[in-house]
Length: 459
Image (tube, rainbow, N blue to C red):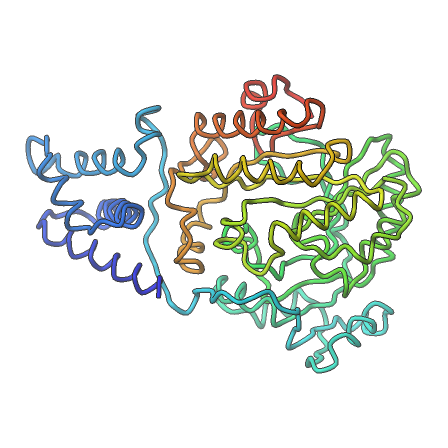
């Protein structure tokens, strides 16, 4: 229903702009249409009223100045806090394209059950391949030469269509090259020395802000079954580094969402338990931790949760475990001797964000003792520009794009600098009420922000 409302809103904006009889070129028309549409959406006011008010308030001297006037007028209306803070800022005003066939329908959390499993021929007899196949006896089984060739000949021309099909298809592959790599930080940000173990690609959850929506070109979940190669490479990597090392599996997939199928984490926890210079982080939005509670880990594994208030989970993190389930899972891990970590990332700015996030932090520390927390990260909502139109099409009901997102220092869409600093300082102050010593760091922020918020410029 919300998609039809947005399509109607867009048509109203188009008609309102046409009625002015100003002759704008296609690029100028697109920019004004985008601004009018976003103001109308955020404030729930008709485009006709918005445009009428702009023309009544006019200060342009002639029609040749009308575009500059209208754009500045709408920028001020669309980005009032940013405009007051900084008159010159970069915005991203792409063409609006709302297509009903891309919209995601909200469904309750269900059991992952792919319809088809594609198996690279050379790993069809691997132990993990056979184990995974037994878990999905009704799935169609298709042998392929290699994933790369399959992608070339079978993918849809629409990246969104590919992404929407991902839970229907499972690819079992032999990974040859992409084992361990540094976290891909944006240029200009202060890194935390994190490494990614690329053990799986794709996620079964539906988070409206997920960067994978604009990143993947595969219409399925990818699981490497040559896990022994990963373990061997990982062991050599740890031995070669003098450390300390932080290595995680939760960058391109959820670390635990499919662990009942792969059992990756059990093998990794065992390996890391033998090293003193390396820490494994399992990052998740699930509560699937029962199978790791009795493992010998020697506190070399940190189980971590991405956290948001329940209101945001309900609106923008579909099919994930709810907040209380995540916190209860964290409590159980602490009882089993694990250190835990929490990532407030992305922090979603809204009118009542302070109430929501302060309540979240209060809830967290009521259930978790600070001495059991390895670290907490803070990161505000940010994304590559091309993701904006994808979110609009897949999640027309979401309000996460309604706040002031401008092109930042790394050309990602972000909240303005003063807004981010204000958010971080508030979050830090609420955390420090419970613990003055727990490690807090910022994700994807430059040194200047670290210095202003945390008083330091290193992890």
